[in-house]
Image (cartoon, rainbow, N blue to C red):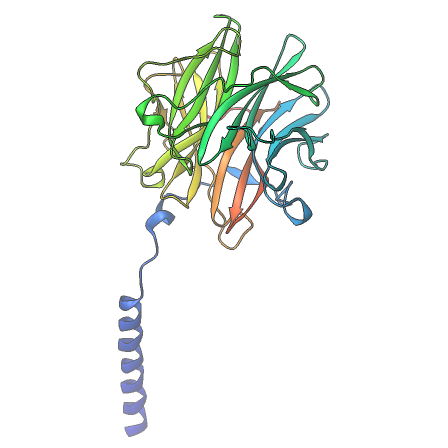
Length: 328
């Protein structure tokens, strides 16, 4: 009887101790309440590019030709924009530099964050040039997608509006054949990381007019997963609206990917109700953050490439939505 009583007292003591320990342990961030729903499935052999001898490869743009893919990436160790190719979007060639930095330049010491548009037999590239804690946007053209020539010694877009602070970067450009203009969505604000998304238009790719009510897309404090910043978007023109993929920051270090849509690509953005769509995987190669999405709609699915970060290393991964219709 005494032995049974001692056992019961011991169990009660252990329960109290465990309860005290669990109450005094520092709580984790509440970001887990807004993890991705799992409708976008990460490719089992991620990452698809970067790491090892290549080091950090980040912030990409993907073009699809008739039978292959071109990925323009930011290759950090080389401070250059590079090109990789693939037949299936999963297995990529090693990066080949297509636009290096300019020695002695006041704004192109570090090259990154490109977008490429194929139009009228030419590859039009807008890119981010960086130096001395600031960022600008430049413009280059290529006939073959490999050899690019800068179209101006000066940036085509600079930080001028108060919200842009010291940086304009992460351009995403489309050609609107109905209006005969280039449309650009870009990020502005801090150098690391920019704060919000602005909009500009151009007839020739060189001379840009910024929207007078920028920024057009800002962080929503009511959405904890993107309460800090929104940036680095891709915008796709659809039949009746514009679809945006973008990065949302919970804080300066933790980022996830979401979607939004707008009738005109400028005003009244509606966020997807099940954001975020892609989140870091605990203990994985993208455990710290998921950044810079770029999606292509295929016949029966969507393929979305993104850069994931684990501590300081960033690499490129792939996520697939196994349906032609996003239901958004």
